[in-house]
Length: 453
Image (cartoon, rainbow, N blue to C red; front, side):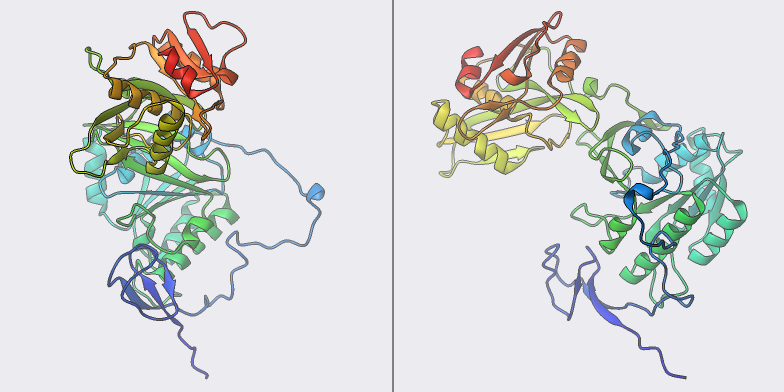
């Protein structure tokens, strides 16, 4: 009998990048001494898998494909449902990543305990004993009478139990500790993670089970393991903590069944993670005494507006070269806004240190905060206090123009709910009908915005 040739490769243990030969430095994650030789393993003994979905189909015209509406069901958590796009989709595969201690296992245990009231649930733990999980559930005062538990790290035995119990939702905590018999490699390796995830994905697609996998992250906050792991799943969710350790942010980075960058906010309490129904309120905890450089802007996170406070501090440079530091904002975006202020606002900041911060640990991923950043910088530079009831949003262009952003009227209405009575917005976002209790000033250029304050 001919021997099966064992394939080997060189893989970074931090980020999963592969290389044809060994080298000391990983160019993908900038780590040193993390590239190891691994055994990639032969093909599965049962033969090559028919795709991750487990099935193949003949060539068909798109118009002839049978379409059925998605029948979602709730996870029991409104914020979790929002992040997923409306709830669980049968047959979907969800990957949840986050730092150690972020609360991945806690929120999944809470969700499964509540979902088990109406659905069959199987929670598979490969990292913790059942006694540890039961102790946490009792401490959080969760219902314990319906959730089925399994402590197992073998992929084959987990699939056997899932086929026997026929649950509607399966949680794998975590994919990095699972081990398949078809791959001769240690758990957590690239080949093991890839093969284990592929087997679970195939099972979910063929059986209609909602599969939730917990994934570890590397030091640069990316998911550990091969990049194919992200390609296999339908939804990828990241759970992170804010600068205030009391809050956790859940955000989708990939979603085949809903919008991406949808944000869910949770508060860490003695009884686990509690949903925050009005996240704008926790990011608007301003001091009673108004200070220069503070301004409120409205971001659009997924399908809802979110009010955040932009703070700026401008001081004379003490060490020759001025510093430009932004927390929660793109550094290049801040540099661009400063250049526009210099060119079209008539203010010279070349000899000033500029610091910009988004209060609460929120990361700004859109351009609607440009105008608020610019006005906050000018406010700090002039040492002028802006009104506490002023709301600002808009994109700043290189020629000094203020460009409109999406969902302008919804942003203004959110401001009215929180007591804001004045707003400076792009002229294209100025409402056609007057909004009660809100005076809106539409501007077309940065100079007009500076005159308005």
